[in-house]
Image (tube, rainbow, N blue to C red):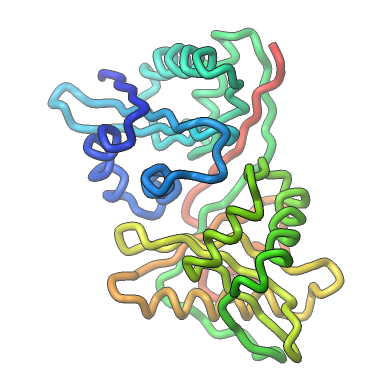
Length: 286
């Protein structure tokens, strides 16, 4: 196995796209990073770095990306390559003067890489969040609720930005850079949907672009005082149905916090089923 690295998204895309799209659900986030890098990410504090692993016949067997301030994103990874990846990622972090905050990926690989990182640096790590990757092929309609779905517009940027910040704080995820710019961009692309009741938005669902027939849904946010009324479940269902009607889209996927039984139950009620364990591991100071 051989490790390769680059900061050139097109070089990485040429090497890794076929590998990533071969598993468009489990490698959805990694594949999406390529599109974000090509567009010129407004959420990153430094340009992305990329790694891929080739086998003895030159075929790509693993892919990794780091887009600060977010953790390393990893696919499944050959165990023997972890030390070399840690060394390379440390060198990149030193070069740009930023710390790698952690690693996110399938549990076995994320745990393997976190241990290799701690062995090399003397740091410690902790499990920040266990997540379940869910996939949906056929939506199951939930009970109706008052209101209707509509696409967010420029007039909704301020509200959706505030909701994004609230979601990040509540979920404990690393925040975007310029959140308002992020929200303006995704709203402009038609990727944010709202549920409104009597003309007032009560829930927000985001969605990503299709990757090899799969669209990832999220974030999903309902303000606390409006929860337990079925808005999030209904809006997620409506968004999912709309996505599955798009040409070429066959599946939708989303991540849930294992520690949140309510959200896990809600999504399963509309047809999402868990398929893989993921984990977000954060590095502590060494």
